[in-house]
Length: 280
Ligand code: PEP
Ligand code: MN
Image (tube, rainbow, N blue to C red; front, side):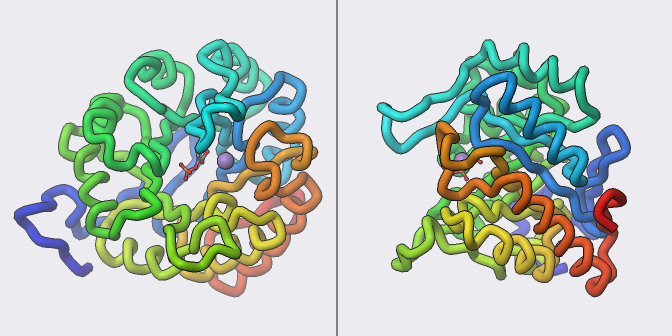
């Protein structure tokens, strides 16, 4: 394993691979775990429909934001904290693990109690007080790379969480800003093997925000698996064009089914531990 400067980084240099295990679901080297769901929590009907479908098709974690950091203040800002009632309903109706974004420390205690996995979005990657706060919880944390962060900055942000005692960090490559603007961001695919050689932490890819285009999500997902990612964080919505946020990059249930089938085939070729019994 390559090493970053010892003076800056103490916890991410390690000789073992971190495998996080929650309710028999594994995150890390040797596993490929899919997190899927709508960009934002919209209604009981949509979350339940999406959750049942993605669970049936092999997703292990339901992604769903109660709070949305939107570029414009005039667009949907999220369902808000009352959405925890819907998280409780999903816990009783499905076996999915639930993940959600923590935007500030205001709701951290409640979200850490109700959700299984916390997410720090790209805009908060360098909100160090928030990183330390999630580092003091005992919940796994998905840390998304800031769109302008170098890998070293990304890893030092992870170090903020690790350094206060939480070693359950999942790194997420979600695309970076480049001069190319056909895609919403540029998926830095080599960040995956680079991060895998620099750290012991699980590395996943977000093919939705990195492309911004539904037509490119499957290609980005397969590239991520081929590059050695340990999983995907994908936006899925039963009717993407009616979704309150990020509909243009959300795939529908049929597209998700096709992708999971293709990933099952690719996983076999790559000797990866991934299969979806209902599709195999
Ligand atoms: C998200 O995953 O809901 C999200 C807002 O993505 P990002 O933080 O990568 O922009
Ligand atoms: Mn989104």
